[in-house]
Each structure stands twice: as structure tokens, then as C-alpha cells.
Amino acid sequence: MKKKSRKNLYEGLQEDIRELKTPKIEVWKNKYNDKDYAITIETDEFSCICPKTGLPDYAKIRIDYKPDKFCIELKSFKLYLIAYRNVGVFHEHVTNKILEDFVRSAKPHWAKIVGEFSIRGGIKTTVTREYSR
Image (cartoon, rainbow, N blue to C red; front, side, top):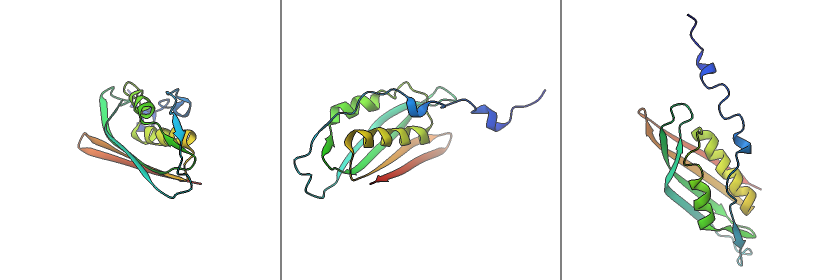
């Protein structure tokens, strides 16, 4: 009997992650867009599903950004994050997807996301990505 290679175990997973439909992240008009300041949004209640095992993954998500014309509306962002609760997704993919959707909505000068995923199987994963114009 021939064993599958490790590469094949994950083949086909996450093929359409960039097209995953998620709730809209709403924004509001920044009345201080002439000022250089930063905003931090953080939650330790993020959850998604491991695409391989189906078990829950938990993470602390932190986004720092320098707004331009818009700021993120927090309730809509919370609902956006909750939408991942039943989605099977790799840590690396979900962190990138969140930042891309965030940037698409807010169009900030600069943004950074840190996804700090809880220990699973003795390994902790932290994924960081930055965006700047």
C-alpha cells in the first residue's frame, strides 16, 4: 500500500480563500484625517476551525493602523471576525485575508496585523503582516 506524501494531505484546501464571502466592514468619516495618529484594535476572542482536523482554533488578533479618510466601525468589524467561527482556514491565510479586507474597507495610510494563535499540539503560531501605501 502506497502512503500519501505530506504535500498531498493539504492539496485542494483553501483554494478559494481570497474569494471567501465575508460580512462588509463598515467605516465612518475621519474628521481628523489631517493629523498623524494610530489606532489599535484588539480581541482575544477570535476563533476559526482547523481545516484538517475540524477542531477549533483560538487567537488574539491585533490590528494597528494609521487612518486616512475613514476609521473602522467596531461593531461591523466584530461581526466580520465572528463570521470566521465556523470556517476551516489556515492561520496564515486568515491573517492575510483579514488584513486585505480591512485595508479594502478603511484605505489606511498604514496597517499591521498580528494573529497570535493559541498553542495546538505544543506549537504556537504568530502571523504578522504589514501594509503601507
